[in-house]
Length: 235
Image 1 (cartoon, helix red, strand yellow):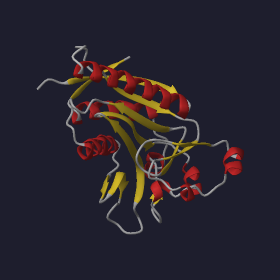
Image 2 (cartoon, rainbow, N blue to C red; image 1 turned 60 degrees about the vertical axis):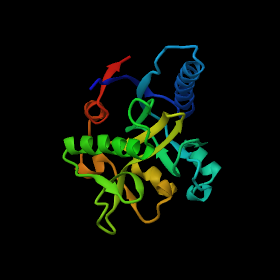
Image 3 (cartoon, helix red, strand yellow; image 1 turned 135 degrees about the vertical axis):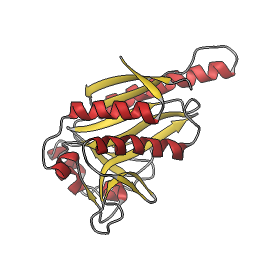
């Protein structure tokens, strides 16, 4: 079976709007290629990407999110140096910040399977396998997207990785946010993902020590290649 090439780009630290604009650019380029192929004018293949980035503190609210899940007002957010964006991904409110790995796959699902549910489960699997590499046992929570720890233990459920995606003509954008050494106090001012009475955690919180973000990225890369049967090429 032929492995698809996915170009890996580590954007390092980048503002949310700038990264969003960059994703939109890559998606638009792929949509143009698709349209030209359909119109019989082109032969160029769509290009797949996996972007890694860390954002300055920001709350993002998905299409189905409720503004009342943000528990502090605009002035309080400004005082704390937290940006805020309504975004076009699925899901509710979440936080992005330093020491959190955000992964944005820009994939043509016509090459990986045109099933959004399967795509989300595959993304979850990449993160679950990565956490297992660091001796953290994680899994899924029925009916709730993302990666959880102790999802079946009432009162102990805690989310370690949030997910929210958008798909346009089978081209994906947005993705996952894995808490590595993330400052979890930022989650106190929102109802994360709109889910009441469940905690948020991080790799640092679970292991009681600082974790190398670089090593986690390496693990994510290996597991992404395995789950998606892809070959990553750094650019």
